[in-house]
Image (tube, rainbow, N blue to C red):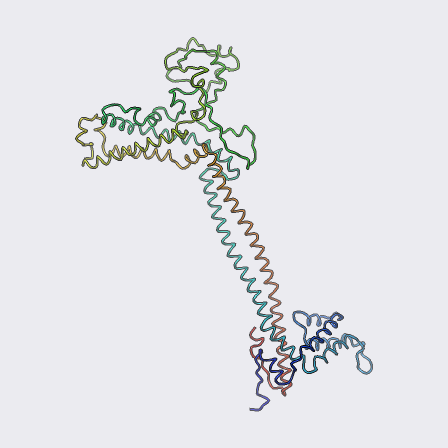
Length: 522
């Protein structure tokens, strides 16, 4: 093989050592480069406006081959300064020609170009690619975090909506909406009291059983509160305690603070809780006229719902014209209206609450319901042990009243189911929540705090998503900006490598020169 055809293969990392070892360049080349770089910096300050020069100076560190191209461009732009001897009078041309001569002394340009090539391949391009990868990684992380934030926000929003739906509120002015829901409480409690009426047979069964077992009436009665509710319904605690309905009901005002919510008129702070309670604040005007008289209103009681339409309470004359007191008879069960005694028939504080609303009587009722449930469970167990499906069948029950002997497994199971239905109605989740809202300001505060905390979490998530979006946009912009830079440097590096290979090839009679691991790996 002819020597001219043997390629010269040089690894890029060995290129500088190869040039020095082959005596193309000297080790002291860096000191000379400093002088050249200063002249280039000075010359570049005074350049003509030319698209080719602008392209040469963009995107890469200026080198010898750029300087040669600049001189070629100046031959055109500065041709007017050429004298008869072919010399250029332009200072620009003189400066760049001097730079070319300094570069060519001892092949300083070649070793500098080799250093630029190595730096671009080993450091510049990988660094830019690393930045690009970092920007792309930030975009992926932002997208993943944004999806997580969205999922969390949707979950918190769903929990908030679910709790608001359970409470029956919109979730805007939470405390006020919670208090407004108390209007539903009387109906819920009255419905539970109506269900309790179905336990009359079970209550009588229990009462008869106790009487038969101990041989006498139980002191204080069996399930007294449940029996009273079955007979009279969900009346006030006052009526339960004193045996007569109050003339006036004054429930304690709710002690809920709305400092953190928009203030409303004072009139709106009094919530109408429904029920049968009526404000008889003007009854005292007539009670002062009756003194110690006891009035019998008959078995049907008084229809107080239309009293304002029937009587003009503003004047005593109106009373005498509308009501003939001579037609009213007194009996022992009539209502006595006095200034002393039971506060003149006014139910106040806990006495103003209904039996299912008053925490004390509510707990007592639950005790009695659970007591009745336990009794029925024991009776069912005894019936199952007696191997009979129609009669209790125990020997000691042979002399029991017919009410006890008539009970079967089926009837007892039905009573047990009715009892559990009433327990479920009393312990209904919404009823318990409304009861806690009415009787525990701290519960209202805690409930409102829990809901507002979810809103706060959603607000924080929205802020985080906004910051995340800004970060993603910055990374996207950075990636867009850096991609052309990488492409430009790679192209410039390939051009520089080609120039170095051609220059070395010329020095060895045009033998092919290959720089291994060069720009083709980028």
